[in-house]
Amino acid sequence: MIYTVTFNPSLDYTVSVEEFELGKTNRTSSEEMFPGGKGINVSVVLHHLGMENTALGFLAGFVGKEIERKVAECGVHAEFIHLAEGNSRINLKIKNIDGTEINGMGPEIPEHKLAALRARIDQLTEGDVLVLAGSIPRSIPTTIYSELMERLADRNILFIVDAERELLTDALRYRPFLIKPNNHELGEIFHVTLHTREEVVPYAKRLQEMGARNVLVSMSAQGAVLVDENGNVHESLPPKGELVNAVGAGDSMVAGFLAGWLSCRDYHHAFLMGLAAGSASAFSESLATGEEVEAVYRTIC
Image (cartoon, rainbow, N blue to C red; front, side, top):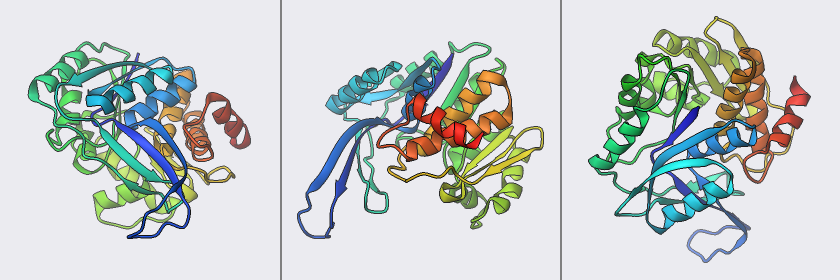
């Protein structure tokens, strides 16, 4: 079974605003609401690709109830832990203003609720997949990803980590099967600026030296690069298409890669599936359907 963990789920309020002006009242020309958070996005796209999975995480207040309802509408099985106080966050995303976002903080997670998640994670067994994705509330230590991986280190579980800074680097000693920084996040780790696919390769290999098995780097208009655990480098420009909404594209890439790998254990196919899924979501108003991913995949395979 595949499990995703989203510590800080959100209700994503995605709007378009024509001729936005600071200091004035602006009105939306379109608006939608989606359940958000990187792990949830991965779960939704995995479900669209026919991969059974379970979404784990924390929810609070009336916003949390709406997130849970929308996740169920997407067909994803979820086992959320509910908090007695606070509210899950609402993220405002303005589509047509350079991807401008205002993300909420999210609720505090008390220790006894964190213990409940640890107990659920402890039930994972050999052959399961654990996807740890996204930010965490400020009430949780940045070692939480590595802590959860340590608890499962002897069970032959595939770890996938999509996070920034210490959340990612602290997890590397537990040899995650896949990490997926973008080129900016990769550059931040090593204090460099990375623009081209060729530039990211040596730094991806350095992350492998630190423990990662496979490093998938998303690069927006530059496409993506995969340095696999066999030493092979896979790279490509993105498929041609109109960018509609970049929200969730990186999470879709993770889901596509995982679905591709589990289907045939071939890294090149997994890379192309990741690229297709990420691009298909970027070309869509929401997260890509299985049919949309397949249509893009056929153009690049």
